[in-house]
Image (cartoon, rainbow, N blue to C red):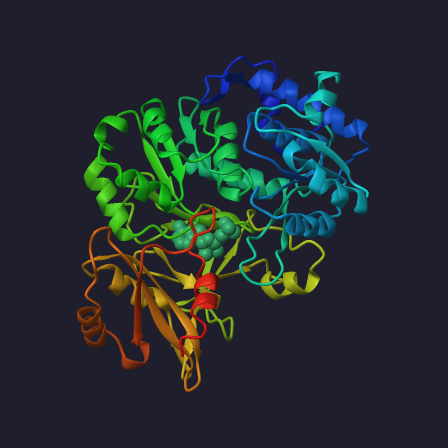
Length: 502
Ligand code: AMP
């Protein structure tokens, strides 16, 4: 009897009294007890009539029990479908409807509002709250503590992750057991995780970063984790001395640096700080090294592919780059127009191929065909280049490309200049409609706290550095940029906000 993902992540821990999770309120969960609770959930799912291949949509707070649902799905051959807790009722309806989920797990506070969706979709609904209570736990308390693991093939689906959907309809990326397992193994090995590691887990678990990177790497390597319900700077500072590794989005690191008492004393036992999901500013990388002596390791991945590249664990971690393709993963830069492979230092579309690449978008064959080539390369939508030493640089998203008067403008090129200017913390360059040029670049500058950028001086500097068609005529100064929960700058919101500037 085999179930490759279950065996590698969970099954090997049967009856183990080793620590898997320590919660911030002091609860210690062993691998063995975690498996018992997961098996009871799996029995509950079976009692509700679920069988292999059915989807389980889950919109709940982060908790140990939420992870038990993931384990129970893997053990039962069910497809785990975690949803951002911020999604509205209308959005949830779309996900449940689109995926055809047979079971929907939600917080009891939202049960009333979401019950109708479940009824309309003929799905069962159970609740699970942040403290682990709810109708799912009640049902499971009467279930057996073991569950006969459902046999699966590595190609069977393990999860649907819906893309953040900054434009258009959100797409359900279908991830197989092999997609997840191959990536977990590669990352654990590449980052040298062992059973001595303690991961400080402060990311959400409805996203590939906090779920598959953080949790799967921990499980596959025998490490343990300190689980925080959400990112909270004081708790991070309190727990860091007991951890060996932190995985974060760039905002984690800028917030840590904003704490004047943060420094070497907090990181004595740490061996690795990892950043991803959004670009880490070079300035943040350098400041962090100055303050702590640690170079943050930046990596690059996405919902559809898990992780693709990583800076080296032992070699040079280069600021402003996402490192090299991971072992077994191919990455190339192609012309967005023709698909022809480009050379070193040329900017184009990033395409990736490997065991990590998803199986396609659920019920969207056309979209799948447009983005996943027959030869297995996935067209990521990210623009980038590979430098002479082989480091990959992300230049921006394809849809962020500005075409002004027929000329291509890569926002990152302008942003990199702006970010170096005095009084500028960070920047975002967007294209806005323009009667003459079609689109024109506009720069949004975030002021350094307590400082004011000199806009005229910055304009002069840009005019010296960049071709005229790239000059943003308008430079607007703001306090902060809109970001989603994963720390990504929401350029679509900026484009909407400033669409009538001209
Ligand atoms: P998601 O599917 O929500 O994980 O978003 C994936 C997208 O995040 C990628 O396609 C990139 O645009 C962006 N991303 C992830 N990691 C990085 C990184 N290290 N630097 C720049 N962008 C990143």
